[in-house]
Image 1 (tube, one colour):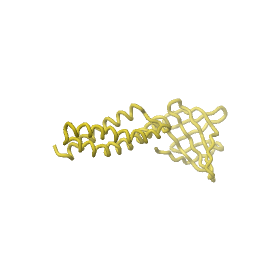
Image 2 (image 1 turned 120 degrees about the horizontal axis):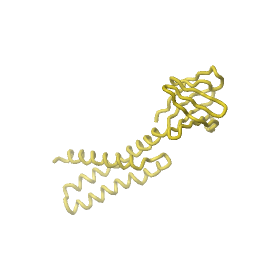
Image 3 (image 1 turned 135 degrees about the vertical axis):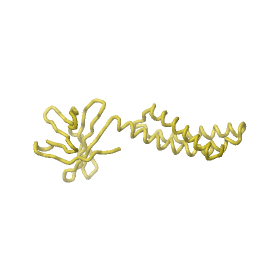
Length: 173
């Protein structure tokens, strides 16, 4: 087998192993710093295999040296995709602007709650509203003890007054 074919097969195997590992650990944003450990770890593992193969099957040693860089790149991107996947499974968000303030609505899918935040140009963000989130067909109902809002067709209804309709922008991760 040619070098390119062996590298290609090893890359496919790396992709499968790394993706299943990332999917299993389900990394959240708070452990994103782990990337500074797992990427060098993958390089170290491949170089250790290359060293062992250097003394047993020299022709495979070169492949693992090259693969150490390929698998590190795979680990980096798949780890970041794993964090993104974690967030997408748990949250969905929308934002809208009013004057110099950016408002965000964050829906927690796991417990069907929502929170609303406001961010000013100075960079401070404040959560000012929490409540229950309910889906009914294509409409979402956001309720608190004293208010109810509705999201329909990417518009928020009832924010400041009952006739308000505000265009929302879905935040894609």
